[in-house]
Length: 233
Image 1 (cartoon, rainbow, N blue to C red):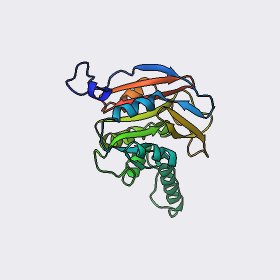
Image 2: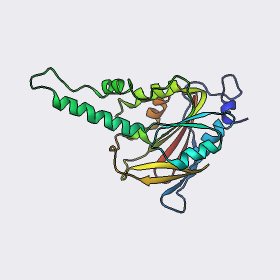
Image 3: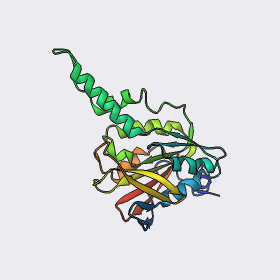
């Protein structure tokens, strides 16, 4: 019986509502500074292991190694580089604002309103389309008013019993990285051109609030100031 089964409603020891975040064993950087041992990924795979022909949503860029890793395990993978799509959206909004005729009735809107407009075209999948979501550390780069809107949509896209893996930095990052799956417990951190500036360091209570619709959660605290959060819907 895996963690998914143990936490289903009515099961012995099942968690209801937003369970407290439980620190898991510390994880450490691998022999290369670009590699990270990921207990979160290992348990993410464990949780979805009994789903036949499951679907995964990867919210980072397309990496052939990541796609091949999941396809070889029998999963179907959809990729939407959410942070890049968000940056392009903001660029278009800013250009539209600057191009408005002098004297036109224009005003900048709040991040929450921008998020609602963004979601009119982003993350357009049917509800319950996915059994697993790889969110990486993207929530750290969104305005705190935007992140809850994104989580509402992502929660709708997950099957009940589905899992989401998300990373949170305990302090502002010095470099912008992308994440590539190497194997079932190893991630490669790839330095990339900065798409966005680190926006917010989430506290545990804020993370619980973001994932309030999920039934249980678990974190793995790394020596590199990164917390891996695994959330079960």
